[in-house]
Image (cartoon, rainbow over all chains, first blue to last red; front, side):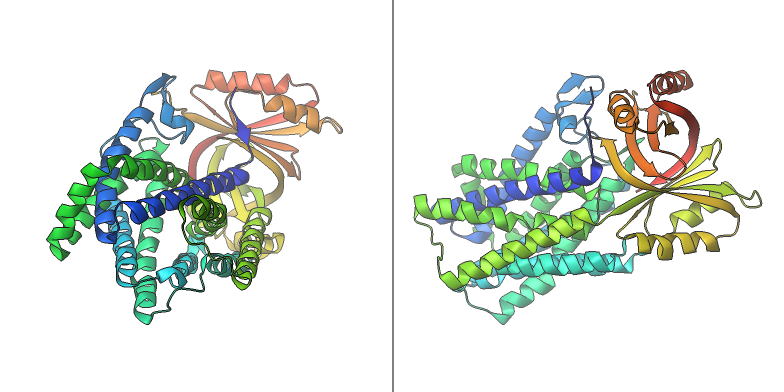
Length: 410
Length: 83
């Protein structure tokens, strides 16, 4: 029997799992850079070099068929069949996502290599949620609603408060790199990975496993070339470190693989900004893991009461913001009958152009079209959907059916 | 191959008091991709995905045989745009 769960919860389950796994990898990275590879540039390149092999290995295992045209990987992403080469139509998106990941990674490496304690500035990476909101505001289809904007701001501030430290130096140059290099890079990565996920490959949606695999390959090539040009010694040191510390590097990239695969799958279900905001819950999971590390490995963990209060407030904000996303959503089907003086194809395109419409189907039967609508409030349903439908010529009548509860096959 | 080729919406009207029971049974039927409880002219809207018209008939049959269902209306999807 197949599993049917409520799709809106699937989105959050995927992202919170991804966030938890990401927190685990952050801790593993902390161990590696503390004990084994202290130079961030060397660490950055070696982790990707080993990452290509481990990602390829995991993708191959996930390609093992389990019958009925399915593979082990289809448990994680039902669109996945097997490992494959990049299709021509995907190539430019993969290059853009690879550049995005490279730029963001290099920005991060620069900040951690140049400043003694960047822990007071790195949390501003979370502002990337707001960057994504702005990018989505520019596109008619994904424009955020007021409730989404408010919740995103709440999560961003909460995430900054939760991850900030009192010890680090606030350096203008580091902040500039974060705001002008790291965050735009990540926006490119998120937006183009989402585009890739929403692409149809053959007659099914693109899968997150191949998207991750190829992103690692492109990012490794770009990062390795950059570091080779920037400092050849670091590059050769990284090759050395790849051989020397491959078990640790494989562990971190192997675990990261699953975090990304779940994140990319979620990108196919919801907006990039909201996905990013929910994934910001990583910083909540990171706190108990940092406590564990500080206990067992003598890592520093500030227990200043002021900081703890700030972190607690931050956690509350993140949880509130994420809960608001999850709980404020209205879905509906709109059944539409055409007058007959306009082609159904034209009507479909016009309805598809309405913000909030997530699917339009032309039907044979009692109704001519069904539009599926996803909005934040019923009021928006009137302003944004009904008034727009009333303005479209060629519609004879339409009928609104609010969805009270919904299950979808996963 | 193996990908479903025919998609359809099947709208369901349910006798009062039977909604929970009907939902439990619908959730066990293969090929139903989504089930939505709605407020309006229909009580439940399901989306099915099958490979042949005969399979569509089988799914419709299974739905109609569920006790508590008053009527079903099937609309085959000719074209679809979705996110």
